[in-house]
Image (cartoon, rainbow, N blue to C red; front, side, top):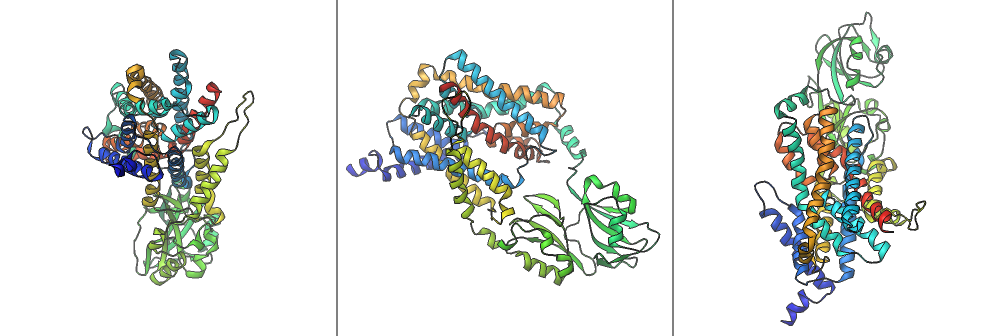
Length: 553
């Protein structure tokens, strides 16, 4: 009996590890098996299993708990930032409107939290915890706890309790919100799906056009570039009148009725027609002619990371052409100043032997991508902790503001993911490796938070804590319904985009599966979610801290 008492009940490093792993295992099992139809709390069950053990009087070593919470949170937010960093452009032409709507949801939620604070007289740190649960944002919970600890020297268990009580209904409230919009606006999902199909693709999307030249005399490729008003284009090959294909160079001579294949941006589609008649439109990856082939080559050599395409001079050295590049599922035009990143998939056109030489230059060895690049992870975490710990003076306040471990790590991860390759830093990680890092961090954080709540959870509910569930539902649903109606009815945004906007503004990944089930024919909800998620995640982490600073200092 002494053995089991020491192993499970006596706080120590060993006992902490045993309890943390046991809570994680039971929580994962519950997330997999305890569900209502297709709905489940998923990994969040770990938090409730930890609370259950904590309510029984079981606790772990405080120092181990503190480390597990903070390091788990850092791993979680850093892996998110590193993944979305390469495509992080919240204020690009296509994402500006969606991100402004997401910001409105965040601000409206903060306003409701402040109003409830004054109406109910609940401490703002507790209200910030309720808000974190209501918006399903675990990093915000960690940031609130850290800020409260810096201000008051102790973390109130009510913060985590508020989060735990508000979280379950937040997922239901999110789904009910866009279903309410769907019902009140009489949305026809099939029509919305058809409208998406008819929308023009992004102006920045690359297109491939075959044009039969209508020039009067023979011209060189260089003269063709000068003749055409489109400056961002690439001539990849020419088909002669006898049907033979040739790769082109600046000195290649073109004749009337030759068919040239041009890769450019969609916004230049009409301008290209000044060269002649369009005979074919679209991409045909992997097409073959009598001697030319198209092949995808993956950039796997570290020496290529952060280098411009012009550095390799593929056309002149290897008599091949790179027409476009696929990065994280997005097709991009292969301009000379394009900066490569590890994991990019480039389309190479040329003779079979020439294409093989180009593949050797860029690596094309997928096994190399399986090797983890640990330097940007630990170096980035080091910088993130430093940034998050820097005090930032706010005029009129006695207490300095800090980005916190979550905020600092997220910012550094976004910057490294976005700009690291420009400085020869390898930031690529496979999706499975990134998800493993993220899930390990999140499970550690949730288990440690649950076990540190204490034995007051049940008494808190009986003494009025059940009202926190209602407050959380108000913080969840009011901003979503208001902004969702404006987005769909006033701004005429497609319903699937509105759904993705609402999920992304709540950082509510558990609801993505439900959204995707609405229309298996398009992934617009997921695309919009990814567009607003990075900025929203940052704002959610900052919002909770600022509320505690302004109302508790």
